[in-house]
Image (cartoon, rainbow, N blue to C red):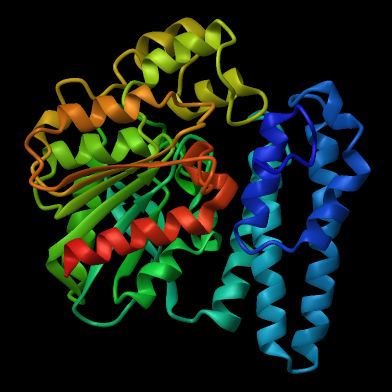
Length: 378
């Protein structure tokens, strides 16, 4: 993996995620250069400075975009708003759950994304998925009436804005497939503004997403798939095991036993995805303390679950994933005996995509998964 900050895995992950989601090397360098020495003090130290430095680049882009709009250069403006969304979502992801500025920063992410949609991607609409008396905020990218559709879910610390800038929904659209990018409980807007925390029974919100799509009238009811990356590699297979209206499932990162991973992290084994890790996971799961969280996390596994997946099932995993051990990819594959078309795709360091969810070579992994989905739906 490209390491701008030698030895600081968490910050490096943010850098490669930004670069592989449409970021430009010059702008990312301008964001990182002022905080290069701070990175040597560890991932938790300096996250406020990380936000300030990346926000300065975002502010410059927004000013340039506003000037472009005034001059009538709407496509140029939209491209800058797109990159500003990318950078700000990565900086927001690094902040403490207790940061008082976090809600306002995330609202700005939403506003910037909407500007990008309005100017360069009007086929993307903000929608709400009814769920247990409230709703899951989402974006719907249409590939046209009657198209198949993929529901896409976050992991522990990503948002629907990360999904959009990743380029994956755009790859699906080019293959005639719509995408519903949903902030599921414990992630994105559902957590930050809706107070919805994660739960073991992900089939609950899978049913809500399928109900919503069927109610639209412009989606092929027989071809609705589900993709989850990172912790979504638990969320999606769990849902596909019990929500039988789904036509396929992709675990983008084989999070077969997330509870075991938490025990490893208590022993300081493996890498964390974000700074301020324990505060973050307790926020996501609504746990008041670490002991309560660890007890809940013990239930987050797929043993006895993936055996019940009866649709095509792809497990995509990086050989050098430093967060989720490779053995879990093999375990998911070995247990998915009822799937009529199961496939395990391991990305190697030689080709790229070998790190967590392939962030070191994200487009390479995205295209493979999009091709697989297109083949199944065809």
